[in-house]
Length: 267
Image (tube, rainbow, N blue to C red; front, side):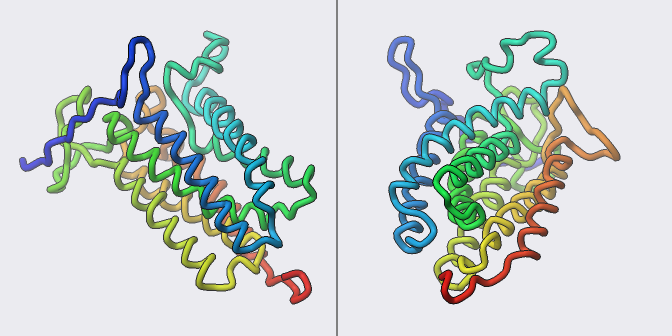
């Protein structure tokens, strides 16, 4: 069977003594920085939504939301009984394991609190934020691919790969599917809508499109992504990723349906 050789890349980018910089950690850092810069660009283009200072200040909130929410979500969703067996699991980030759905929840909580404190429109700031999130998704999934983790199910497609530390069978490079659909494609769609249409004048529309778009992309890719071994298939053969994506699809559909054009005086 024809398979594409896996491009073996050391997960550690730089190692100096006990200090090791990994591609996965770098993806988080670069994703946050690029997302922050893109939000600054959108804030300059739409200054009525938020100021550059607001964007700068929100960066710390978003970072804490991603890290805390991502780790807590992973332990709660993907490590059943993990806290009961070892309470330190919740903070043991060095063991690996982050959940996008948990990180998103953390950022949403941070967004709501931040906007209430600054008296900013939550939906409008959420639109700007959601335009930037796919950048981090793209880089994060590429880092998953470099790490040779979260691979797909066994397949005979021509672009199948044999991942290191797997069972030696050709599998879908599902990380790259997610990088394309959840990251690149979603970013380009939202960027086009924000810059070339009046979507930004319908609060909640871009955020809704992101939530629904991500949820649908993740739900679809899960059909070819190998379920987490500690969970396997759950209700009706669905994976945890699919179950967690359903609320996002519903919330996104609700935001899209309720997004109304701003009055001329509010623009």
